[in-house]
Structures are given as C-alpha cells and as structure tokens.
Length: 152
Length: 109
Image 1 (cartoon, chains in turn purple, cyan):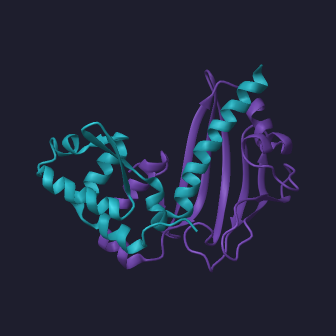
Image 2 (cartoon, chains in turn cyan, orange):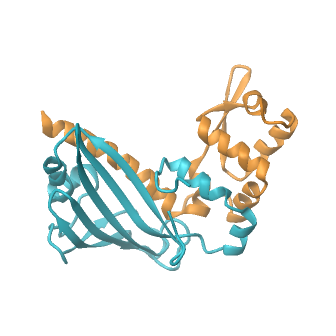
Image 3 (tube, helix red, strand yellow):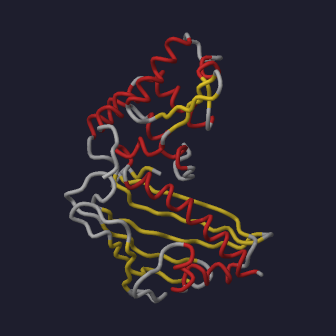
C-alpha cells in the first residue's frame, strides 16, 4: 500500500485459522503466549497506554530494543500497538523505525480471519535512483515476501 | 552487518525492464533454469544468461547446479539495500504466523 501523503508502505499478512476469535485473542494479548510465537515481551499488558519492549538483534548504535505502546484494545476484535526502534546512523536493518502493528480478527464460517497490518515503513531515501527504476521494484518486493499489501 | 551488494548495483540490475522481468519470473518460479527462462521470453538464451550474470553480481539471484542443469532462485535478502526493514519484517511476520498456527494447534489439544 502506498500512501501518497506520507510516502510509507505497509506489510499485510492474512490467514484464516480454524479457531474462535477468543482463542486467538489470548495468543495475541497474553504475555506468556506472545513469548511462544512472537518474542518474549518485557512489561507487556493488554491495556491502552501501556508501554512494553522486545529485544531483537542490535545493529550499530542501536541496542536492538523495539519500543511498543498499546494504542487500542477491542477484545476479540482489534489490537493495535506502536513498534519503534532503530537509529538514524544505520541504513537498512537497524535504521530508524516508527511503525504501527494492527491485529484485526473477524469471525468466519470456519474460524477466524487474522489480519496483520504493520504500517509506516518509509520507502528508501534515494528517490532519484528510485525514479530511474520506475515502479518495477514496488511489484517485486511484495511478491518476494509473500506480502499481500501491495496488490495493484 | 550482512554483506549485500551496494544499493547502486541492485538499482542498476533492476533498472533494465527486461532484466527486471527475468528477475520477477525467477521470483514467481521458485527455481528455474536458463532454458525455461528463455522459453517465451522473446530474447535469446545468451541475452538471458547475461541478465542472470548481472542479477547474480547484484546479489539478487543464486544458482544451484544439478546434473547438467543450473537452477536459479531469487535471494530476497539481495533486496535488503532497497527494502531494508520492510523485507526483514515481511519474512519475520510470515515466520511468526507459522509459529502462531503451531501454538493454536497445541492449545486446541
């Protein structure tokens, strides 16, 4: 998804799980369970405004800590938190990151559609080089990662 | 820091429309030979080989010889200079969804 105003992109991953939204909600919002499929959070509570962290691989001047804050909690439906990290001295992995993760659960006939939107990735800064490349890579990148967010 | 081709090399490799088309076909195919890539491409096998060489040098494509054939596949990490965090988290979340699926199965038992 290309947002004309902010020049950022989103990653979207969707999957239908054969489980009730209530079951999936627990895995997304219980500290111990989050640790079993995502990463072990520090200071996590599913309470709006609550701040928590994840420890990831450091890069350059960045200690690898992802700083999150719970932005929205609608039980069994929607869960939103910020996801920030990186350092301006880094390029690529470890560069400045100011993003938002949104989980949406929708009950379906045979389970629950889980939709993850990780929004706010700033496109590479070398705009003139991007221009000469045309739009090719914009199609390439999502097909590589199996990301569903950029279907034109 | 992971060793990747400089951003210029990646940009240049993907700036040529035919080469980009070759790369996109490799991405879609998973693994593919030069012969298969040439078929229906409208250009010669020699031209395809040249494009593959450039893509390889840019770190976008890897090869695997098997018998008389060489199979080419995309290196998603080769796009890191371009997509950086995005390519990282694209792969990250797909992996984590697999983990979530496994955990849910376990909870169900």
